[in-house]
Image (cartoon, rainbow, N blue to C red):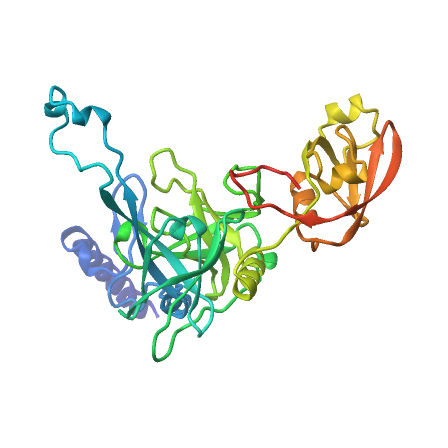
Length: 389
């Protein structure tokens, strides 16, 4: 027994000695070699069997990219000529200038989303607003002339159409109402005219409004990079389903700073269907301007809560004026639908068909007043409007 113990002790001593020599002279021969430093770091060896995770969003991107197009527009405008150009004493200050009435071509770029195999494309109103000519480039290299079916400046949406032989890919619609803050999204478009590009981020906020971008605002906010040229492109979920149309960025210098805004597909779909059916969007209107009912205003009007909106102006001759609505009234419900803010009021009234008789409940001098209003047709906007209904 003592002999075996002696042999074991000698073998262990020799083994430790060999290990010490290798660790001192050739530490790289040891597996999971430790690196010296402030902390001990261990690295996997090439043959350890570990692999970099390959999971990503390539499947979603491949599904969507064929249906996202690049839109190139051109417009022709008359160039104003400085009146001093006709005076020979001043001509040398201006150099060679175009003649009076000369034309100049401007070009623009944006993105769009093919929504049907017939060639209908959703994009932004501001992408095609001033276009004389539209060229649409598909991801597979095909190009076609586009024509405007109709547009809606109050939501900044437009529908254009292309005619091409063969298969025209179309995107799959998702459910924007099921989107949640923190969900991963992809933004696809043609930023800076560099070609089709995919960026990734998350939804950072929902139902963003009061931004002054459109009359009707219910934006999805995302930190996925949206740059000039992305306008009209697709915002999709992790499965490649369309949930928004990229519309605007917050930026003092024209680049993406992590705050982009997309129009929810629920809004875009309603607008698109009306445009395809009739070429325009028809909305209800009663002719009032409103403002939010703050706690201070509610206290001054001796109201128990802040539900509703304050009518600040009534358009003369409008349906509301003819029905007896007055400035200073508190509008609380429309057809028994409670109003929480000016956006809710605007959306509720605009959804009513012209000609319908709507029931308005108002607070006037601390008394409830019920008025019937025959809804009119919302006039075309001249300038962006922040909340008239």
